[in-house]
Length: 120
Image 1 (tube, rainbow, N blue to C red):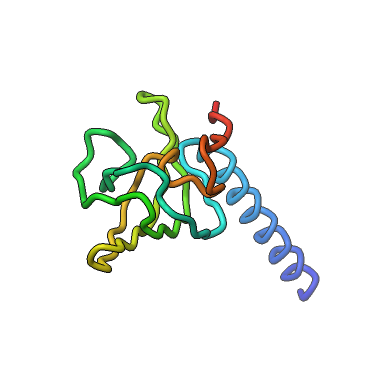
Image 2: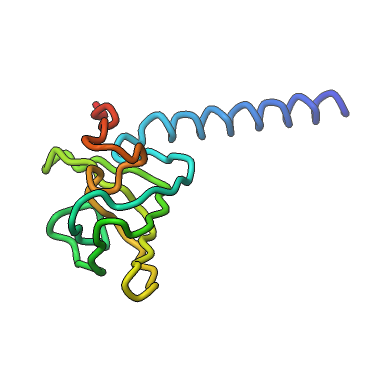
């Protein structure tokens, strides 16, 4: 009886890991990244609610504002990368959460930013 329970537990764990791995392999539009910090490198950038140029604007970030990023998203229709982040503005100290164009909030701190590979 104990052997059967052990076998079932191992099988359930294996199946759970297989399902989780399959879900990660198919998530081609967003890539999780380690949380990092950098500064905005463009003169101004719109912070949007979703990774699309038609999404609602949540605020504007300016060159030198601090940014903490935690995810990248590729918009196939626009052929553009976005970074999900929290921008802390120098002017008023307000924190704005949303998506910004990757090149303006690149995690490498230099210009131009090397973009991640395009998902297939």
